[in-house]
Length: 257
Ligand SMILES: [Mg+2]
Image (cartoon, rainbow, N blue to C red; front, top):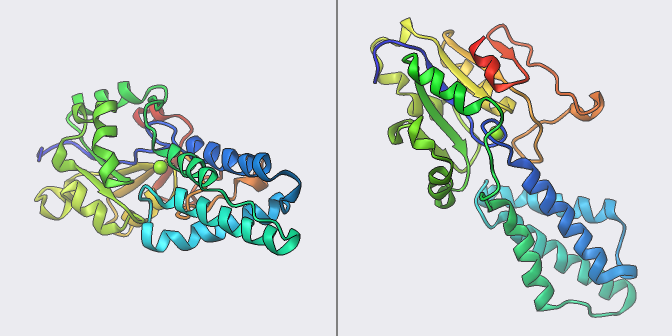
């Protein structure tokens, strides 16, 4: 570990590139597909949506962010809708082919082939690394998919393997300590330790570690369970985190300013 230079722990999804849209697109495709295949036998969208997100919320306990959760939640919702139609109209509409198609929709958020870096990200990371800062990556993502995704995005040029950590649940303060090497760093008190991310769960936990941990918040809302998104009340505009050690910015390259 470098003896000088500050340390940055970056979040990946919706911080370095946008990823949430793939989840939202899958949800929209799933609901739309149900109305396509079951038409005038369908309950209303508010009910279907509530049933789906309730099931998906329960599935988080076992799955966390692992691949399979969304597909499974969609299939369970589909079966529930079929049961309801059976009850209400006395019709059996369940089809194995439809279930297969729905599994495919549920798996689509894990297709990383269309991800692209947000403006200024690559330049900013290279600039920081060139200045002697230590860059770390802490992401909440499916471990089995992460490595091929990291290869495709070329993450190794900024984030060494020993400074990369993938967790499948919500990030804890301990995860930040592990990924950054904070506990073992003899010079830790002389450095500033930054956490950069788009959600409060990327920013708040490490602030408790010590006063020289600071947050750089680039808000972007998500449908994830780990998110508290109150931007709806503000015309989709996210509110800054009100904390003396957190800076809220809009664009990635502002990290350097
Ligand atoms: Mg994120």
